[in-house]
Image (tube, rainbow, N blue to C red; front, top):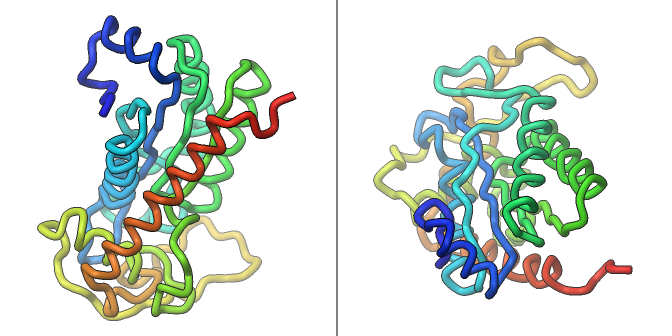
Length: 238
């Protein structure tokens, strides 16, 4: 594994002769119900990226721990940045990766909120318009088969994430609270929805198991490897 943060510049320079691909894990620091840590999204992205980097000849960059967290802003421990701040920061990171010699960058996010994903996508688009390189944006949840999830419309801190954390960091899982699906307005734009969020869960942690977590994790790893193949291919080149 080429762990960027532990390598000297000559080691990185030598490694760039073997591969010019790097994975940037992106997460969030955000409440995940009463049973999961605030670093859940980052840990999930980082550990999937580590598993991929163990199998593939790629660099692994240090993770980005902060994202856009709108619905969970009112909870202690949720540390959010604005859409514009995330977009600008990630765009700068992408440009700097190209300046450092990388030609292929994958952003692998473990946080998939709407504004968060929009900021990342815009950052990628702005960067590729400015520099000649290839970039992919993937969420690890893109690759988890919905038919393998018992809970319909499972989401934040629910069956999927609790199962994954039971495999990745079971020591940080504090039980399995009851299901909770907050009812939020369909069209109304509100300043704060904390009073509608209950315990912070948006799904059902109760059916979570380590066995499911292992299956979900493997799906994510296989999916990311497939996305890497697309990134490193000639697909879309003129």
